[in-house]
Length: 218
Image (cartoon, rainbow, N blue to C red; front, side):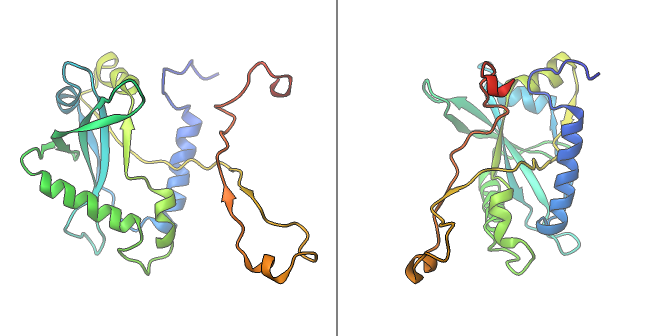
């Protein structure tokens, strides 16, 4: 039986499945080279500061290719709660490049921005547009990640790790789409057949959005 999970901790089987799914997806659409992405404790302490801010990680690409491929990289900045909502805004500095050794790029934000923009061109399918799956990258790969306080506190403070590794996983979940598509194609007019139906997806998945009290969720 698996031990009780800590806050924001992934079950081991789910983490393994996410890594497997990423490898399968990478063979189709991820034509980038991966290098170790590490967040060091001293960097973490510098980013959260006295106000215990959040850490946001932006994905970027190095300008120089290796073995004919662009190299994925990552940059970390400090994010603070803006007002009373759930919106987090970024401080411009400090900003660190997360490699085997974290580098302070606070005096070179222009290079950071160019790296992030290059990645977003790749994500949009503008770079290596002839590669398989280029048109689908924007639906699979995000721009950035807003890390939670709890997972970082657990790893750096409770467990006292000097550094943590950032890896990638893909969650595979069947989702639902609502559309105006007609089921009876025989009764549809030619005009109706020519119109592409609109699809909507505002459904929240269960889990985690469940009614634990419902008899239908027993």
